[in-house]
Image (cartoon, rainbow, N blue to C red):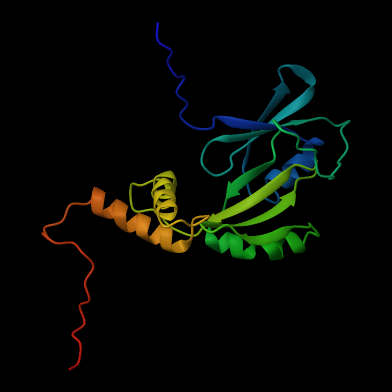
Length: 199
């Protein structure tokens, strides 16, 4: 029998080890704005509680909490095979306010960092897990996912020999996707200059 894939269809949830209940609520909802949806015992360890938050896309971030666990914000070790960081999407407007809102709480952060196709700010949660706030530099065409633009931009940047995706690659990728997906009555869709030149 031939091997077949187990096809995933998105992240169902991510579960982290949190501190105490209130610290966890204060961080995930009180700082990052994730609505606190429900709580139940950790069914594998009833001494812990299991808190569920919505990160904004209807999926779940869940936190195991324990009143005996103390806040320890030192950066966690990240050997091979361990989680390095979690990145959350924020709008451009929220990204531009992030530094001010982290500073007003005394939270240390790095960034903003230019990633070519996005901008990033990094900081730690109360237990030392590295968190990234990421803001795309582009809006995909209607009905197109960010991933489709990214793979097209990757192909364009490798064809031009660049080390990473830059804004020109994103713009060209969006143009190419629209040309493929949206029909036109024009027989010739090449770029043109509509302004007559003075003689």
